[in-house]
Length: 419
Image (cartoon, rainbow, N blue to C red; front, side, top):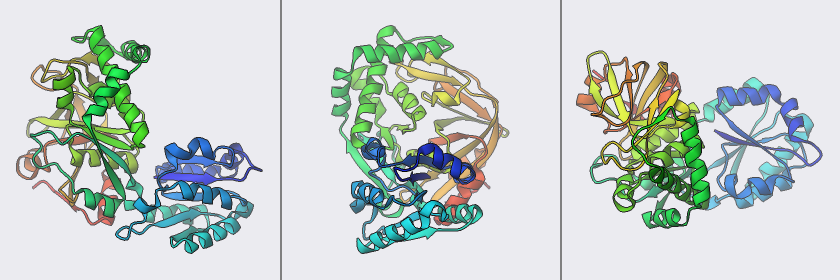
């Protein structure tokens, strides 16, 4: 959930943080809110990067912010978020202090004048947080997703109806030609790429197959994809990564790992259903996710593996080559033996899901599987071998089944239960 807080030029960010300390803490903890405080002098720095999509709520911290709201509203892609199929309500928070309710009423009237419904959440902290939790559903998923090339040829059951995404979850999908990645790699700064490669090496436990040249090309690929993300204002992306391997003799595994760590949800192989699973994990659970293949199953455990993972999920990392091709740079992450949630949201119209909580019992390594491997103490045979929602599943730090089920219940999505 994204919340922007508006304050007048007579106050400071510190004033807002101190004045509303308890409410802000609860919004972050209970609503997993990403909060940005904006004043007249800081709106331009937020503008293009973060204000072109409507936040989930606007907190009015003081009076005198009516024109500031209007400036922000005029930067929003209103056509996308308020289509006839997907009317939107602008949610405002105002507890009444510091003339916040008065300003909210003026803004509410302004929204009505431009044909947009608004709603003010007013009352105690308990009432405001409860109301936000109740409303925390489809609106929290708004964003822009980049599709870098088409899905990989072997993904014959992992697509998503893009019109459905737009109409039901406010998600805009953007097609990105892989030639833009090629141009970006050619034009990437060598000095900048060398710094990224060196930082990776400084934090890695070891380096196995990749050469210095491999590291440099992987870092350039990261810079190229990141630049496109910035240009297109992307919140997430999925990439036909094997075309990168074949055409440019490098991999996007490192790029996806780094972008996930920076908050841009990044998935492999053009798999939109798994990307939406990762996207929901970030928005609802506040966690980046590990996209992986189920690889070995027993009656007590399930091992999953893949060649990229957010580095922040790992205790240690080893720099490896890509498993299938032996090319470029991949990540072997050593994950902590902790609690995890296994999750998949699938179907062309995202109408079913699977979720299970488990503990990691081993972080094995075998040359027969992708580089990062983790074994969970859960028997997935009944589900995966009979009712699986595609191949890839995602692993999320912590126990989040309750939050996921709450979201799915509000959105009419059926749970796939192993028998």
